[in-house]
Amino acid sequence: MGARVTLCSHLDHTGSETPNGPAVSAVIETIAVAAIDLAELIMDGPLAGITGKTDGVNSDGDFQRDIDLAADAIMRAALRKTPVAAVLSEESELPEVFNAEASLCVAIDPLDGSANLQNNISVGTIFSIRLRSNDIISTFFEPGTAQCAAGFVVYGPQTTLVLAFDERVDIFILDRRAREFLLIARRVRIAPDTPEFAINASNRRHWHGPVRTYIDECLAGTNGSCAADFNMRWIGSLVAEALRILVRGGVFLYPADARPAYREGRLRLLYEAHPMALVMEWAGGAATTGRRRILELSARTPHQRVPLIMGSVRGVRDVTAMHEAVEPMFDNSDAPLFARRGLFR
Ligand code: FBP
Image (cartoon, rainbow, N blue to C red; front, top):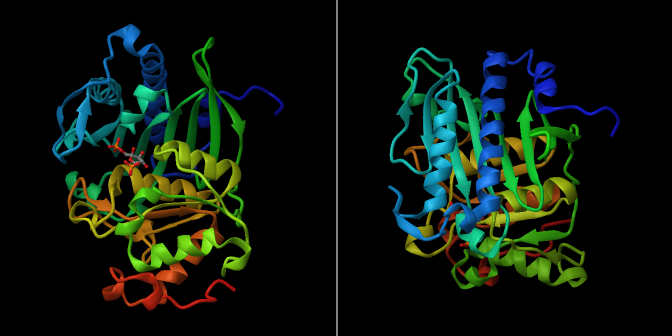
């Protein structure tokens, strides 16, 4: 890549057509600066007193580690200085109103996948930005199409910022010495047809028929309906899986399954699935529940969960075809009884 383009200079030239573009840029820049502090804390880990131990549970019943609380405090303190009316964080039960006159609302998972940190595996921050409606809190209950920007940071061997803004997706890497993000990939496009899937296969016995059939077809390789030998990846860290899809394609599935706590999936709509879906679609990929486009869904509760299938258009289309071949009432049935073969061609 030619000239060195910083996130700040990129934002100066992007989003001029977006309503409240300068305010959105200010929020993005603030999240990025806070992410630099968080990256340093994560890098130091135990050296900075981070034990990784659970300190309790959040309102949704997830274990909260000291690093989750530290990440939440860093992001919240940063966002207070921006034109943000309210913030919904994974770590608190309800949205918090910051500045009732401000024009934007932010949903954020300050540190996704914190359980991975003890093994030095990538974790991330995921964010979603919306223009506020008259009633501040109802902003969060509008469909994902209401997002004006979204993105995520991956704290891994490099600190990477993926930004969906102005209907395009760009990738930045942190220059640690200069403490600024530099553009490394513009207008990223997801490969439409990569034979690679990511799913937590230990849950196979709980999956519904369409998901089980799709994965069985992938595993059948050139002998199956997909007619391709598939590779498998599972990092167990949403941000790392999403970045991999942007870089080399493939499909990621975290479906609903038969376990009582997973009837609506595992991942959260407002600060995981919605922002990821915006990133995927603006990079030419797709994101669905298997039956519905994620961006058309509205949350009923702040921490609502949702099945998430995202990535290359061909993979997402094939999973969707498997669902369409089965009445929703039979989702919970064994695949061989209900799936039709030869759907992919
Ligand atoms: P948290 O929201 O609890 O941090 O977990 C989210 C997550 O780690 C995702 O990043 C990842 O895709 C998923 O959970 C992994 O789930 P599993 O425990 O089934 O591997």
